[in-house]
Length: 217
Image 1 (tube, rainbow, N blue to C red):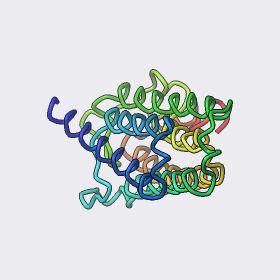
Image 2: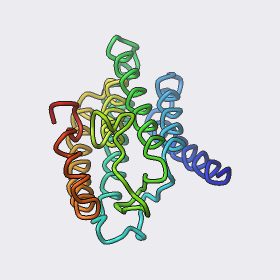
Image 3: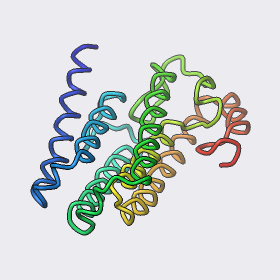
Image 4: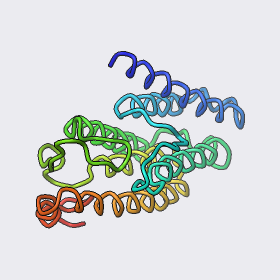
């Protein structure tokens, strides 16, 4: 457990360093703004609060259909473009702290907490790949009482509103579109697998609880 946590912390730090290095390469003075360092900390926290994964994962089972890689690279691409928008096209206005900055940060934190909570509640049944664990059952406690996929919902909220936080408006829209597409593709294959292996129990749960937006969608 301790080794796993250290690996996640190292991975998160490397991702954050790449993020900051990318910003410095385009516009070194941008590193003087606290927003970039806050985003780096959020990135480390996101890595630590979820299971280990590989950006290029060839070990995924066939039923995964590449959805894990699709989701990861949708996040990486949207965040890289948002950073580029903030440090070049919109700089320095992108780092003026406004009400939108505060709202973006709070919602990004909410998304991070929701995803971490979802991973914790699902416990040993959480997996990076689309699989059914031994003894797998439907979990309908915590955030799963309101939506079937709170982890994906949290990730979507977080990575869209990190863009709002740095006023990368075009990238916020882009992040919403490409991450939503990756999430829905993932859900399609994941739910097919769960319906197949959990049967009526999951079917009843799906009828009762919405996928991503409580009571609506």
